[in-house]
Image 1 (cartoon, one colour):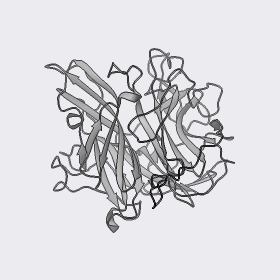
Image 2 (cartoon, one colour; image 1 turned 90 degrees about the vertical axis):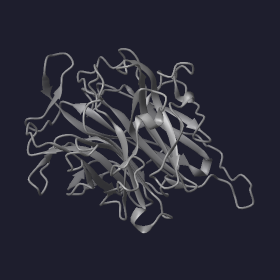
Image 3 (cartoon, helix red, strand yellow; image 1 turned 90 degrees about the horizontal axis):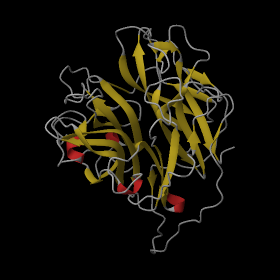
Image 4 (cartoon, helix red, strand yellow; image 1 turned 120 degrees about the vertical axis):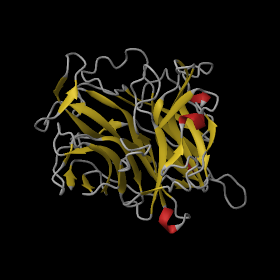
Length: 404
């Protein structure tokens, strides 16, 4: 499937397999950081609307969780879609798709998903497989060159009063970035195919917890993982103790060591571990020896003006770090991208999360909007101001910084 839109391209290598700027003689080769522009939305957003028919006769009814990187010649995109016979059909399943573009103008979407929920009725990820993040490791075994981490679930968080899914994080490998296979149960630290990180693993002292929204970077042969996290205590897990972004590392993509959850320097209030954000996007800029992170962190009624109510966000903040552990982030400054009701493709709001790819000194941001224009027949979104739903569609949006 080929999607036509407007934009331009650039050059350089993938951000996900990089060094630390140190030369062979031990000297620091980190380049100075030059002047930077601001993220601006590109003309002719939105870039993609779901609703097209695939060769199996079904359609995608949604798009979410974009993960994008520049491989030196193309942008490689992974995203989650709801796939069904029709918008209201009962055969809906979550699939993860792959698309590519050389110029951000034409996106070619593969007809077959690269990953789906587990068909095993007893699997931990039989109902949800979403928020993909993919990294390429040229030093890994041939059948494991591509590592995908994803959020999976099989039901509701198993404590009274909770309505969200019981998320954990899974891993799958691929030789070509197109066909992914779950980590075998025999290798999983939890004895379940795919499952590699749980909320209880991130918060062992808590009654229970969740982890989701994984984000990968590969630096000096080590996989770094940032993720949304939540923990609670009490007999029924009634007291929230932690909410924020965690950080873990691994040398094989299967066995993870949690370094900090939540990361204190990413909290709004360092003494309150419930004040963290979620849905991180990270790039490692080897030339300048620094990490960049974009995350969501809305408070109070910030996004209540958005007509659609479904995992909304006002936009994304940016933080920076030299080691991936201690971050500089100022929540009193403006977001790198913030919702505007007048912008095409996002008249009704924004979906939580944005993903950023680096292309030399430039950055490409993909994010998802809610819109009421060119809505496919029968498509609806949950309405904040009225009971039920209103006509609407999820859109893929593009913004860039320092790219032509």
